[in-house]
Length: 221
Image (cartoon, rainbow, N blue to C red; front, top):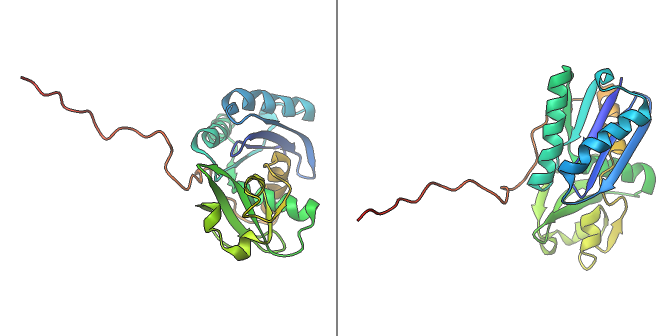
């Protein structure tokens, strides 16, 4: 296996290569408005560091969000184009699940917890997890003040929790998605024979830029 993982659902533009046993190369840069410019060089870097040619890839995994429309689209389109050109499968993973997996393995959350990432517009993308890192509800976009106090007062992983400390009183790392953990999560699920998502984006709300309903008629005199 030579699996390329990438994620652009947050301010982190991140990519990694997994050989089926472990992550052999990974890189992350933070640039909230630079996903399109940074992703290709980061992919090239991790492939070079892993000693893997593009044609050697066997799978592509991409963070499907939730995330802001523009950044998320960059990663999803890149994954689809690469997979189609190479004739290999492309899989999607909920980006919040990768954060949860990393939290369980590295931070040592000691019970049920939540993951909250920045949705902008003073909102967060939120999902709840059990102590093992399994998601127990569907991701939602919510205002922090509307989050159930029982959730907000417990351990909450992700950048969203750190943005609103008055609501989320026990914020935890990691804050941004790592493609290394996205790859690790995906490889474990595939090895267990479990189905992953397709590359349909989890936007959860309409994009900011929408096509107009129609042209206005010009009144002739």
